[in-house]
Length: 151
Image (cartoon, rainbow, N blue to C red; front, side, top):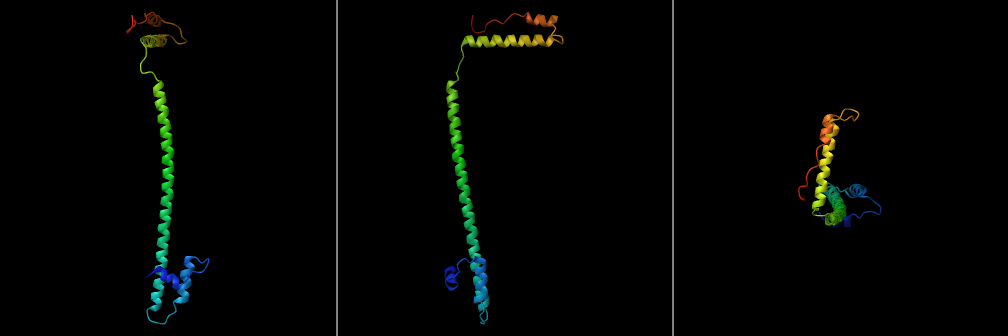
């Protein structure tokens, strides 16, 4: 069956939807008294209807796929831009961070860590209310550490 010839024999009226068109074609044009002609015309109309529905569904799916693809491409562009901005910021921060520290800074940090640990240990041995004990005073009396990398 050729849909074009079906449409030429049965033109659709202005503003008529597909379902009403098929019903009209079946009721108006399928009144033949020849054996099998009526069934053939009804079958042709229904086949035309099925074909148009399949085409419509396929077109809707294709339009939805195109819209989804556009949406995903827009998200990809947005995420790529954010990634590039973060990568540039990371490179900028990485370039400003020193790769080494001086011996003086290292010694000061080491001594500061020792003093902090010594004071924390002394605080743990004190009585409630912060009253010093012999153990806490003995810990506080420990001498500072000697420099490891400098003299």
